[in-house]
Length: 266
Image (cartoon, rainbow, N blue to C red; front, side):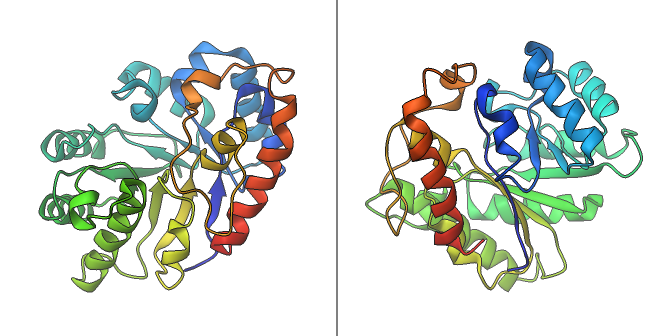
């Protein structure tokens, strides 16, 4: 695995501190419209020359943010990468969206990223092939697809999803649909030990996950294997929490962030 860039999503109150441990800044466009502190953070990141990846907010909203909002913030921030709208576990609609966004003109040097959505390994294969045929230079694979548990029917569903995603990507490499020259982003994780599986997979370029932050908010610390289950805390419920409210959680968060890198040798 090449040197992988890592970013952890954090509550607003930890945005400035996050630059100390994040390799790049992960931007959610709906929050750009909703929160001034968040907007100012990304304006400053842009001024600092920080690498910025802009998502489409599907995971947070249940559907991709509206096209007008996406286009406004892509043109305003000019992120290094932009994840084009996808539809959760819907291969056909995600491919349709990807086809429509191929011709959309974005600011110079913004890389369009397409998310592989599927309900089976077969659909993941098809989706990967279509995206590459369309000319997408970088692909993303989400952590939460249900079919990963069919690929790896583990009694611990979080481990099953983590191992299942790895098995899908490994199979795509074996079939020649991905190669070491490709660029892949891993969206989130159900289990923090997952990324250690990718040590010999050179196409993995970047990762985003709030896992160590949410575990810290739950007052849980990582073991040598991380956590047995995905944290209960959800960023949607803690995004605007005050620093006073989580002051006693900060040691947990700091420990988990450091441990995450150690576990996965990042």
